[in-house]
Length: 303
Image 1 (cartoon, rainbow, N blue to C red):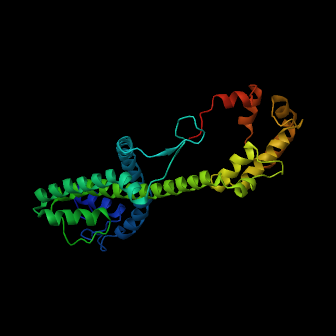
Image 2: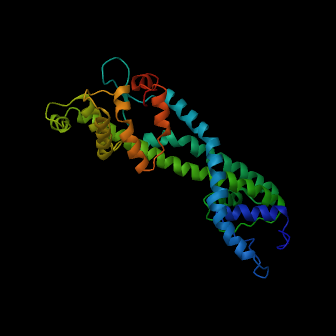
Image 3: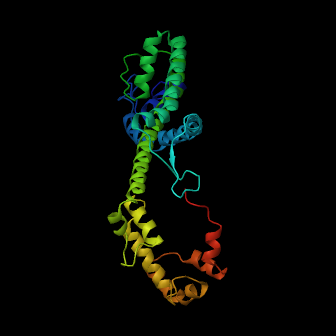
């Protein structure tokens, strides 16, 4: 700061513009100052990877509850139709909406939030820098998207102070909203796949393809098969845990009890040691008289 001849707000402004990759180009390291460019290069990576990443995550965490509550309110006002699979009068599955309706409903709150924040910052820029509102909102949008053309220049320390907060909040919110769109798209694709699976339950050939042992589709085969087709689990992972269960089931009863677990303890300890896996959590459970039935009874259902 002292080597560059900048005051505190010029320095903070430069650091924020750099970390957020806005890069107006109005402040830059003086090549005549030894080490200034090297410091800038180091800070670019540190600022993007650490500083702004943490700041962006913090801002996103702050606005997430607002997005969730607004979507919950819209869902109450415009409820999504559902399917009662087991006929008990309760909807077990929500039917995916059309893309336009789905994204409009879920993105209306982020859109209003972004527009309102940009208008607020633009209005304050008008007061501080003497810009007209059109120039101010143009500057805010160019900044928020990290384009940073730099054609509308900030001339005062007050403007740099306001820009510091504008960049921190606006770029973070836009980044969070972009991630939100990606999550919404992923959730919709998952819902569509589930809908296909529900429809697929009426397909005899598809259902019979889940039969692995030729004696009809049991509950285990049905659930695992559906999850595999949904890409929720991988078949090789299922096979691995089936083999682990069979190895633990020393009496081939189809159920694990404490005797089964204790019977193979020595062999498993040797295997775990060879794989350099910490077996202390499992040993503590066994010493405490761990029983799978008791553990399952207190587990919450998967949503």
